[in-house]
Length: 406
Image 1 (cartoon, rainbow, N blue to C red):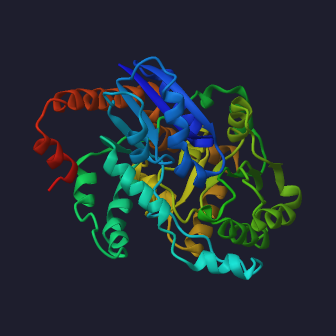
Image 2 (cartoon, helix red, strand yellow):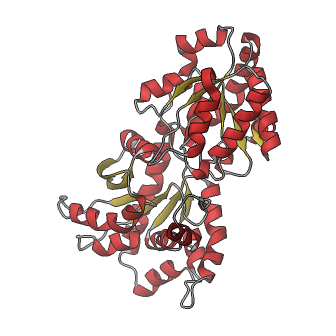
Image 3 (spheres, rainbow, N blue to C red):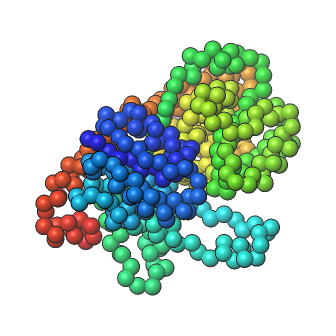
């Protein structure tokens, strides 16, 4: 199988996903990329750019794999080949369930008015892309389920000719395929072993984007309570900033003072891993999370997670970990964090927590390693190719029924 992977937003977890899969897949892949910026323009314009580049390729691939940052319907219409290959759409996130940013009082009146108007364009592009794709791959059941649950209400806001078949049609072509991860062996690291034996304060890490959907204000409130309670702890900030720095980030840095041991995104992989392996607890205050790759990485590095209930973390965390990992509400977040920090405050406590971590959490993350996940991706995509070829000679009525699922 030879595939063409179109990567319209090549940065962060999107880049790691594409690179990891191509490296471990048994198929042969050509990758076309666009820089990870201007996401709204990517959703509108990337299909045209990629169609122009595809015209320079030698022949059609067996399959095209792309992401939710691309307009698949436009891409299919612009494909330069007489026989168009099937398209697999990977949904890293979905716009129907993505939380809107709060309106900032410092914005201009015109920007505030624009923010109050409901935004339907990008959700609609997700819908038409899913309808146009041959298979829709979701990084978690939570991602799929929130999209499908929101879809009927989303469609009702349009005046007429609404595609009522869309939820069923998309459901029938949906497959859950978690993100693969590039895992390594942190327990054998001399630096990790030496740090666990030290008499030092426990270290908390924040390795999420400084954006509204990750709710950095809730993280700030948590730190304020920890500082006021005179808990001994340190903090590593590894979150990435896009555009103007979030206001909460500056307040976090100022408040932590000497407790802050590192501040800044680390792009180099080994340095990032080394920083994670120095941390004992990873906290998420996300308002939404479709999978949680950054938490997976921190957990694999040895950090105990403190996570909000009801998000995409359920895709990989076992139910046996729920009581010690998940929280609901600000008070529960504080209490859960205090317990996690207290357990990591002494070498004896860290040794006991490490055994539980090894037995429950790292065992849950291990199946997400790319050598395992790439084989699952290959199988799904190969079946998509076989199905498309089998249906190529079918009558029009059969093809129409498959599209409408009615």
